[in-house]
Amino acid sequence: MRIVVHDYGGHAFPVQLSRCLASRGHQVLHLYSGSILVPQGSWSKSETDPENFDVKPLFLNKQIKKESLITRRAQEIDHGKLVLNEIRTFKPDVFIAATTALDTQRLLQAACDKFGIPTVFWLQDVVGLATMSILKKRVPILGWLAGKHYIAMEQKLLHSSHSIIAITSDFKDLLVSWGFDASKVEVIENWAPLGDVPVRPKINSWSEDHGFSQTFNFLYSGTIGKKHNPELLVLLAKAFETEPSVRVVIVSQGPGRKWLEQQVKEEGLSNLHLLNYQPFESVPDVLGAADVVVALLEADAGTFSVPSKVMTYMCSGKPMLLAVPPENLASRVVSENQTGLTSPPKDIDAFIKNARSLFESSELRTRLGENSRSYAERNFDIEKITDRFETVLTKVVKSASKRG
Image (tube, rainbow, N blue to C red; front, side, top):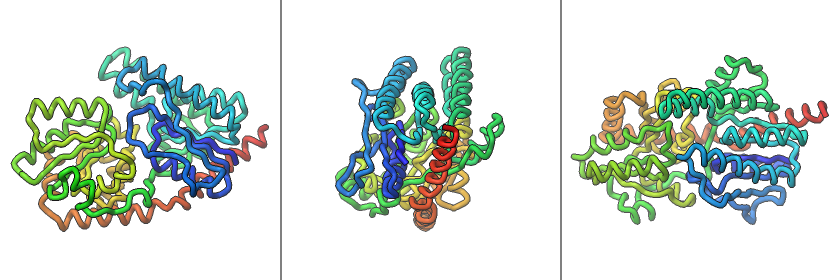
């Protein structure tokens, strides 16, 4: 098959999938945005990659302005036009879209329908519900109307897709409640590339260079967006102000990071350290420097999002501290596999209590960390994961050829 995989955010695990599909003889073009400020790998075709694999970042003339709704929408449409040019040139048998803005997806799906290219909607977030949740807080009436618009758009795009891959059974249940045929939806949970995130010792070149090799480090790495509550990170730092060895280390950029910078100045939080996104090759050492890794998700985001950073954390073999809705897949996986301590996002006392339990017990940290790596080794086999994607793609292409 000729396959285009579009992962707007440029995450590590979709690239791994694309490489594995290419290793099986498929011609694969992997596309992502090079103009969005999120943690990304330095993706490029290597000498060991097969001839039938290519990966390409797509650049706009300016960085995508996530905090400006109007500008962002226009930029996302412009990005879609770049993807469309690649589709026209490559002429795929099937198109997979992940983490794609709905206005972008509408443009691409209309073009694929015109060209007779079947589409697979890789549902990472229920964007319509997320838009409703975020915008109605900022501009209640207009936000509600915009949310309704995007929910209807997302439902239409999902209905017109030839297949849907959902990252959690919760999304499948939601789609069925919206009237979707359950047989159209395949649940394949997210993963992280084990080989890219080996377990590293705490004392490593990165931790020594940044002064974290001899301190106790709570580490949060990744985007801090509207579905996260950075105030919890401030409260975590305040709770450990009297512990001279404790550091709260945040590796992030964007509006959430800027808010934290202001809090550090106003509160005088000397134990809260803010760093920019680190090079992808440094990520294992960054995570290795952590004693505990932290993930956050707001209460109302539990229905439309799953924090994928949890899967990367699993690979690092670190114990996790989560403030995530208990019904969310990430919280369930962590609790059921005993890889960390979880609390509801609004239960601050429980969050701080869990943090202190992890700080005080090295035995607990070791056990949870070992469970994390064990979970990753059992569940992140890329060959088995690719088997499932390949089955979906083959079915979609065969079905499209029969209709054609």
